[in-house]
Length: 405
Image (cartoon, rainbow, N blue to C red; front, side, top):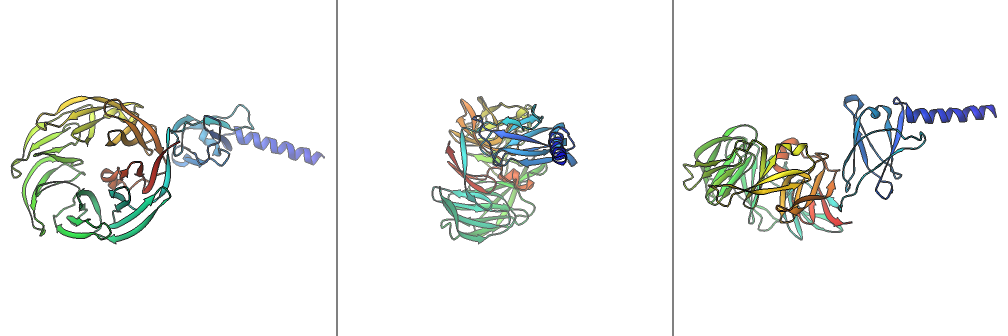
């Protein structure tokens, strides 16, 4: 009897010390607003040797190392808003401290895995490519996704563009390739422009090709070309990190950093482009195009839960004008259509968010994907947006469908 009492008291001491001693362990519980346990939620935080990352079980419970009590932690899960908390012990030592996380208004349903990023996406077929030159064709539906064809094309793919059924892509050090996708199941190389150097972004218009690098300041280069693969450099201009650029009518637009948001060049004579406008926006750090608008992203977007974006109307490229502001609760990197945008949720940069709204009333996050692996860093600047055909989205090389709850 005495031995049983000693054993019982020892177990109680261990339980209490495990909950209260920051050298031991303690438990937390993650629930939804209706107090239902959230399985598979991740709790992460700490630094260096004291970094921790654990997931909740079917009861919504996770066991954390005692040292985690010294740190703030992030709680996240697909289809819930990430939440930052300071970890604490429950007042009742035998009960886990409970945190409530809010579900998003809509949710992602996983359809299946893909390789690479989308270059052609319609209601029946999805075509992707990857950095190593893999070309993949998929059929898909709500029930799943199936690869129906594949091919090997030149490797180290960087920037990709589809013009009609003609697919263009730049490579790391092997120039630019052009393929016909008239039959997506059987891609055919049309020609190859063996332009020297490590290529990145490029822009096309009427037999004119402009190339630039996003890694350092460098002049942009203008080439003429033909379908035999012949090309000739006809001019160099500017000195830019070439992160994003495009043609609008006979004008070339590059939006770099705050000192060229945007820079506009007259291209009526491609051999002699000249600067007609240069926007200096000290409060904004980059931008992206939506129709004929340049959407400027403020420097404060990483710190604020609600970010105000500035619209620059480029309908007259020689005279860009401010056309108002709108807000969003995620850091936008793409406006997909008149009611849908994509970004990274303000609470956690690795969370991809889908937003609903417009450029007049602003955008609100409606769904969040948190378990998406990052593309390699050197590809993020090219393919942060991996492709979509709403309500289907490629995120982290997986195909998701956006659904109502």
